[in-house]
Each structure stands twice: as C-alpha cells, then as structure tokens.
Image 1 (cartoon, one colour):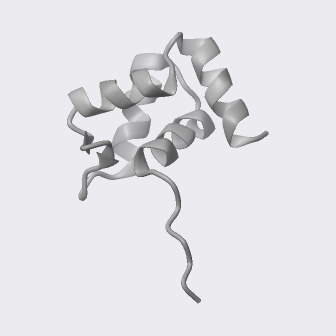
Image 2 (cartoon, helix red, strand yellow):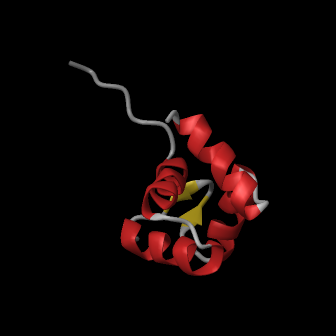
Length: 76
C-alpha cells in the first residue's frame, strides 16, 4: 500500500483530510509551525489517533510520518 493510499483510507474512515488532522494535531499541541514538536513520542500521537478516530497502528503511524514532514535528504 502506498503512503497516499494510507492517507486516502484514513480520510475515508474518519472524514478528515490530512490537513484537517494536521490542524487537530496542532490544537492538541503536538506540532508547531507545521512540524512535530521536539520531545513528543510517536506513541502519544498514535494513542490519540486510536482513541479519537479508531485508527489502527499502521494508519496512525502514517499520520505521525505526515506530521514529521518529508524525510531529510542524505548528503553522503
């Protein structure tokens, strides 16, 4: 399953777009300026997504990855 397929399935299940979930994560204090705040563990966000949206672990991890932002480019 592609990353986009995960996001599409999450939206179908929750009715929330990736941008909606980013805004909700910011309201919860998990992010600042669109990025995951230092010190937050993925487990805290996963539990929120499981409790509030009944997401499974894999789908919740896709949202954590979304909140972390794109991967850093390697310089080697």
